[in-house]
Length: 106
Figure 1: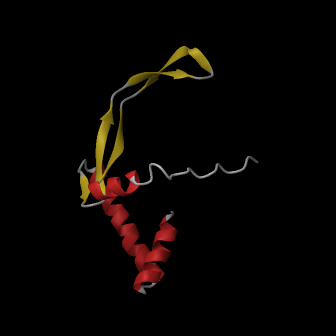
Figure 2 (figure 1 turned 60 degrees about the horizontal axis):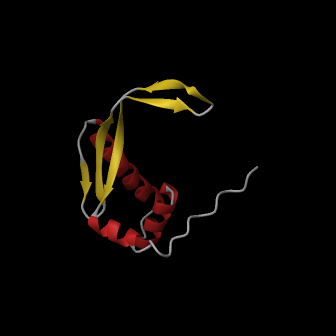
């Protein structure tokens, strides 16, 4: 699902103008991003929690030249922990989920 798909769906269900829905969705995403940049945790009840974590520096390997070590610096990353309801809904897919087929090679 893309942001556009989300906007169209909300617009259809609420009879709001797509441009207005887009503005609300975009502002929501902007405010979430802004909070994360400030180092704040964003908790959306029944959905999940976004937080910034610092990954430690580490040594990696270049698959094309396995003999060489590559230093990977520390960096900040966004982690997402799903809420209870989302986790339970997704767990129901365990026995029936089939991943989408990869796109055809060009």
